[in-house]
Image (cartoon, rainbow, N blue to C red; front, side, top):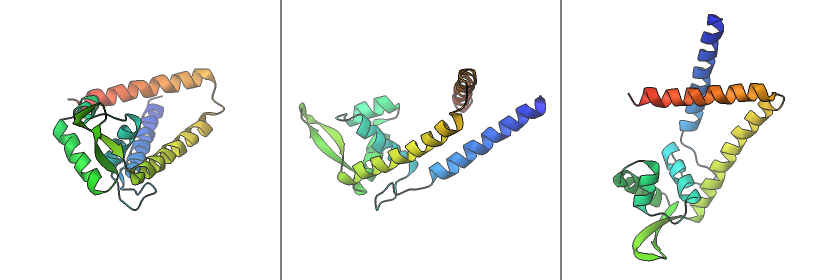
Length: 151
């Protein structure tokens, strides 16, 4: 029993390392521009939360306005994000994706969809009890990772 638990732990670590290695690499996401992991996730956030200004993005992500501002400057230089006037308040700036940003977003989405397809295929014959157990286990594991990373 203990050997099985250690083997499961090692498998999880191998999966995490493999995913991190693949996901952390720079990627073009169907554009001619390299986008890092944090950059493409900011692109995703902007796409999925349109018309937010810098302060609102910072609040939603739990980071400083300065961190968001630096990231946006990099994304502007790469041509994936533009700053625009808020149609409801001309003193505020909102962020929008450029056509290149839209392409990157779609490329990133396809990447996630391919991961989802693999998981769906692997779980297609699992019964509800197994699915419930696996979901519960992964949720608890995720929470424990957040607890250990905050200390």
